[in-house]
Length: 435
Image (tube, rainbow, N blue to C red; front, side, top):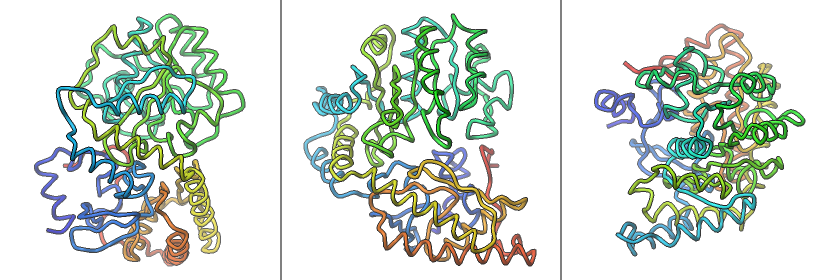
């Protein structure tokens, strides 16, 4: 069965068709995106039809920082499987990984684990509330699917629209949580100050990514650190996406601002299910005063994969490779657009970069771009998350194909044929319910 045909089956028996919004094929190329993989290695993904593509898009939504099926990580995991992954006793790798994470982040003193980013953020917020005895959370950016976060939309349906994913509805979130999640925008310190002025004694935490699309304004993070300390709120840095992409550990290490809690997932285990909540001993001890526990957080594969991933990341200075490759692709987007006469805006960290066409038919152009690149053998979209497995030869080949694709887009705009060149519907945006 072809990938899209299987997805049509999935839509009937799996709500939404996929487990992750960001993997819905309709968000890339409706009716054409391969949708499912048979195998993957390095940067190559083979679909159910036996076609192999080079992934120049999101590499497992940023999780596979070393590349697909990294031999060193997989070797460690296979050895762990042979020795058993779940018993009545605990896996010693939990302690080993905690020591490594604390070595990388000297400000922290304790570590807890889970297996996914969203649940790790829920743990971090629970600990902050337990530590402070307060309920409200000030936040900016996207932080997952949990009640504490979606509660922002209970009073105002569009409160989250400027925080990465528009259209998130809070159905199923208890109405009693209304007013407990208070959004502010990155680099808008006055917005946070306004929240603090009205909620000074009820804020449990300030939650944010230390950096994502934009650089922090001078003094912005330092002022947030000061505010959190002054009002007794827990400063939580969400490093689920940024962690282990710009340096050995959290990007906050490069920004010289230490939080009270930092949360990691995705790249820390190269695609294996693993997440960690690290924090100061004073704050993390509050985990003992509430109930945070789950059987599958004690299996062995996650810590083993994380240890192997982080050690390889450090040994081979993977961050340097990601930054170099990412910068080449970002420059390539800009150069190809300039040559073709297209208006394009590229931004983001080099290891988490993205672009957007500056045109009223932006969504049509984006969809057509993905269609053309797929025909050329690339999984490509408006995002690129480089991996250690990306080679210079692959990047060079991609940039040649990119220039050709952009030239086709420009010609289609001149002729007014962009939409007619599409072989299916335009891609979807944000959170839209599939019917």
